[in-house]
Length: 387
Image (cartoon, rainbow, N blue to C red; front, top):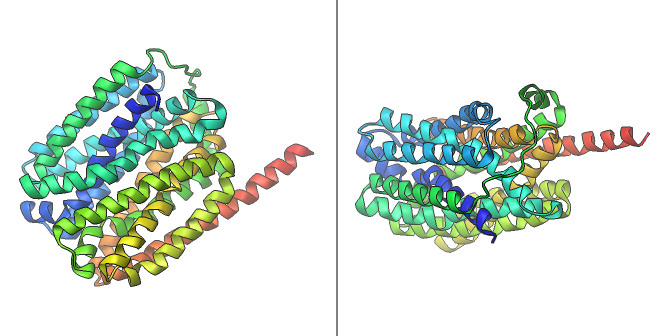
């Protein structure tokens, strides 16, 4: 891996760890702060909404800034936010610190994706983005399980101190390895925001929302599911999260190759695979060994959607790739917030944990429908240009 991509991947590892590790620590945080599991689950929604709100704000704030300087500013926000999470004395302050940390997320992945794609030949753009996102997937293979184990051993605050150290390492790597001058096209904010009137861009962003919501309706509550339905121990939960992370890693690399091959058929096929896995999920999660199999399969197909959806948005908004890439991260995290919220509402309404995948299937079907609609619009546009 080229060193600049490695630096971006290290930062993605830290950002992914702080976003996802809260799922493994949900019962610990709830007990320590004296709140319910659904209330603790709102820390996931709060972070995701912070990404959604912060993405366009920081996209505007950093629009004319050199890319390396912008990425250094964003990783600085990440470091400060995690320090505040570690020392937060109560629920509301922890929520505020999570939202602050989230502000850097969308803009970092948005700008980082463009930088990664610019560092390689055009035919390898999706694979370069997938390599950057490999840090995000490794966060689930290593960061989340190890962070969960550390939080169970020394308390959940120790996990956020560890993530702060990862942020400092990422800042050093970015400063050392990222080129001082990364080519950047002149930015015109009016032109950038005008892409939001393009139906293809809006459809692509909406597809990302539904894909992410489908994942997080179940994933937010994966620890209670594994403990109460599968019957695994807290240490067993750590092992299961490790397996899920293995699936995410495979999926990220697979998704990059599929996106560089045939993007739209890949997205359609992956949505169908996600739906099939979620239909089987309630039946297989009741026993440990089948649960291991379905969790790896779920992680693989769900995260394989990320690189092709990212490239889909960037290509649909070729005149404004910086904003589009950043907004797509906001779209993914809006989906995270919607999924966590829907799952919490369902649990409080008395719906069993094993019924959550049914909500995820409905959301994935919506994403599949939007993808088919996007295919139709693209064919119509190509036919019009050929006349």
